[in-house]
Image (tube, rainbow, N blue to C red; front, side, top):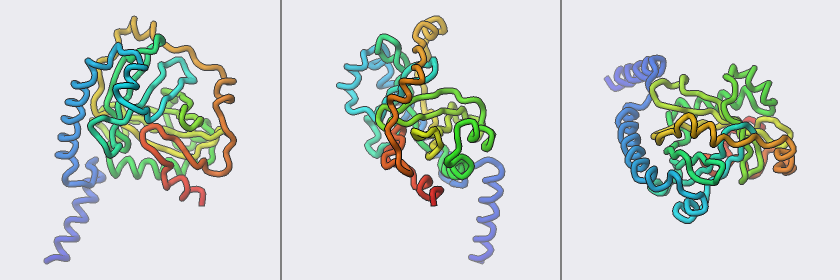
Length: 249
């Protein structure tokens, strides 16, 4: 009987994965709880932060996880560790206006969709490691990039690709490809929204567009790299992924 139960459970897991579940019997309840907590956190912080100068936000929220300077025409993003999540699993994402105020706030989480995201990162890193951006997009079948940043903390490029369709029904989500000073991919991450604040009105949003940095600004931000960068993309979560070192071997 135990053997039969184990076989049946394995088959159900496989069927569940193929059918779109996350191979975790508690994932739905965990997601509901996580989403409710994120909505509560957003309600607590959105009214306080939107319109606030970033200097005051820094004083209120503490050290930034990272600042992402745009190489495109979109706004600058500042990432803070979530005040209610001491484990560093979720983040407050602040979109910044040209007058250095917070225009929109969201609560985001790295690897939001669990085992699917971990698998996704592994496969993409296998496809993209040491390739250029154009080669990555062709090899992995990625859509056009939505955002292109330089990380202030690490000086490396972080290119964001919309990835919401990979696991449906979870809200906005990105795959992030990280590029070193030679513009070769060395790391992949995923991040998804748990709760998003109200976006600025279209007219206001257009007025708040940040001019793209010239290429020379990117080159100025770079630092020489030797092999795998010792301190890779800090955005959305700390130290380099083990996957990069694995792929290097």
